[in-house]
Length: 298
Image 1 (cartoon, rainbow, N blue to C red):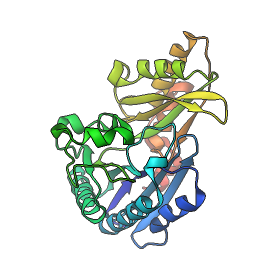
Image 2: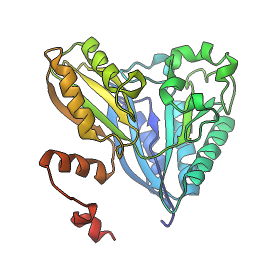
Image 3: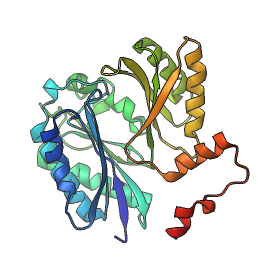
Image 4: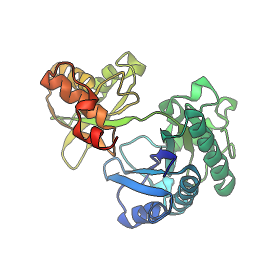
């Protein structure tokens, strides 16, 4: 593949393995498309797929997966810890190799327009593709979630960029856009208090006065009896993972709570972890050129 775009579609299904396999299938065995990873979470009731490909075959595979998800997922029956507004909740496109940000934006717009036309799906363009600055932030678009979209879309301010001005009855609403790589990063706490997790999330996320390029909410992990601060780090080169990890530890102490671990959802750039390792090991004058794998791939 000479031109590579990454796509990380999020689907609102993390429990039914049969449905998950059907949704993932369009990304398997296709020329010009490679499925890198998929991660499902039963508590979040969410599936995150990471796929790369050349623009045109990737577009076809994504559209096929959207159609299957709409058929298989009924949002009127969906319950989960993660905020969501549609069966296909969000579809970001990330330029990786020989593809510009403008080309990624064009690909996102093509997919959005085609999905709206084929499936009667209202679609908002977000992040770098946003038609209005007020639509850049996904959390702002998704506010109200699936249940609130039926009233929200009646407002002229929230007229979708593509598709009807009413949610799909069972598939809701979708956001599509181009963005830079982000890291889905969660930090687990040794408490079952969702209130504490939400307070900590409020203090670390940028929207509430916390760290730039950090979005966060509190989530319950019912199967483990604990809670977590669930985050999207939208630019790890400017707000490093170690910085948010240390801030969460500081905030947790206020409530007599400890950090018991963290997790990364899906794939992430190697540099995000190297940066954190360099910080904790105190390595001086380190360069990515010292990474063996980086030299091999040159």
